[in-house]
Length: 242
View 1 (cartoon, rainbow, N blue to C red):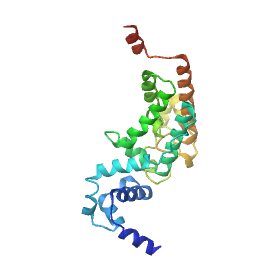
View 2: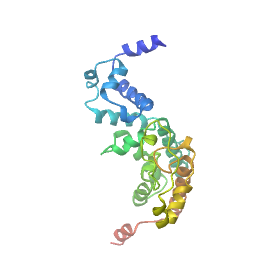
View 3: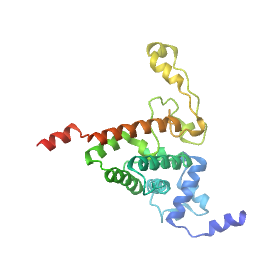
View 4: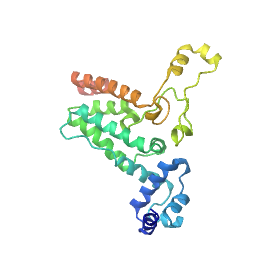
């Protein structure tokens, strides 16, 4: 084992090796603790050596995201649009569960990385090949939101803390203060009823596997119904009439 580690340390640096080492380090310790200094230490090089391959921390994060997104499986070529989209999204979710820091990193970027753009282009391409109009495909992508990338942002988000974004265990749902619960009783009872499989939680709030697939299937069923009806947005209808 020691010989293997020493061999890796002697392997010449490349951009791919730097990015994959950064992904592995974030998997192990969380994205918050990742720095150019501790990445260089992990690779057995001086920090300045990294800057030949990534110009700064932002470029490092973009590259790490692209490494992760590159692990998402493409659907089978014989799948219908609904099965293909579902397969791709659930593969994205499995990928993010291997890299629990990735949703936070994706949310932090101001612009989509090339791999994310390619992934989204593939999802939209599947919809268009399935007969979707540009108008409907546009609204579908809005409705999916971050769910198309395998994670969701939820209403009952009392656990937005390091336990969910790092390697710690998520906290159980907590009751609202009595005065708040009395004022908003329906919110209180639903928030307290949140019981999730901690082993399948990704991201924050109610984003566990069951809730994720429940919402995904609701969306896909509704989208399928609109597609069969030949739905168009009111704006699109006005443009066609003109």
